[in-house]
Length: 427
Figure 1 (cartoon, one colour):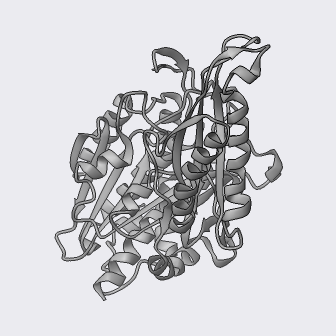
Figure 2 (figure 1 turned 135 degrees about the vertical axis):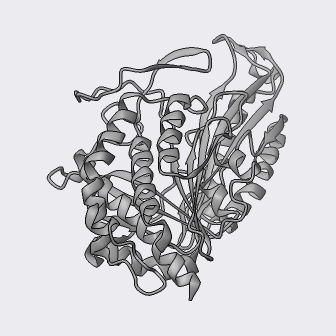
């Protein structure tokens, strides 16, 4: 980093070229890889990122940042104050791993165990959060070394519990927001490494890029009877079957799919204990995924209406809990901000590697930050160029793997987005 760091970038007079930032990130790449491998070998589950947080906080303190720990249980928030007037840019990385047993034969593979809902489980960074931590530490390093050239402040947000909290707990981005992490912030940027996107590429989209998620619970109450005499029952199992089929018509017949995408899934159904007893009730659990508020509101109106009327038509009663427990908003990329920062993406990755993407129905609690201020969420390539896309291991699986060379682009993007936004805000 000597060449760039020896000559701080005076943003009041000039703009850091993509090559300047690329050179700095390239010289830091070996260290970023070391960080990533450390976190990969020592993963921790949601709300249990104690060692991870300590490691991150200790490094950020060495950079001379103002560091706060214990945010939303185990989160770390550090502020870089340039001393110059300007906006506050937040950069976010998630830190938690998953209850997955790693099957990769890597020298730094995880053999860690952890506790999840009262059970001892293997733990793995099976979604790339280890790379997110390392990339944000890299960006923090470059920006800190050029503190005097910045205009404003940078808030580095290392978030716990993106993957969801254990039963009976709270955490993640929603709790960070409640505890004031976004106070004073003007804009927020985040990214996610992708195991099936080529190294060196970045995917973007304005509007909804990841779905909002709303879990639900349905209880169908009927009348129990002997299985040989179903006419004496009000059968909640048959009623539930009708309900499940009816729910599928919300998307297929009520949502304008040319403009919207939505999913209504029943993932769990429980009722009865014997083959010859019709039970008195059935419980179902499911999830709703939507990509804009119009579709979300439509499903919220239609689902309970459909369930209650189908149940009534069968002589049963229905109780609908929507949402059940924690919901995630739509991960929504502010269109005006996306338009402003798109030249930064193209300058950093190259126009041919800056790809407009379709939305996905997975969810991200980064959306809670975007509810507070305009924000962008991007996908960064982590697939080796010689690996066919169809053979790339999926996220959340034991064979999840990424090409570490892809992290350099992540460091560059976080750095350039910060620098360019500060410059544009000044003007």
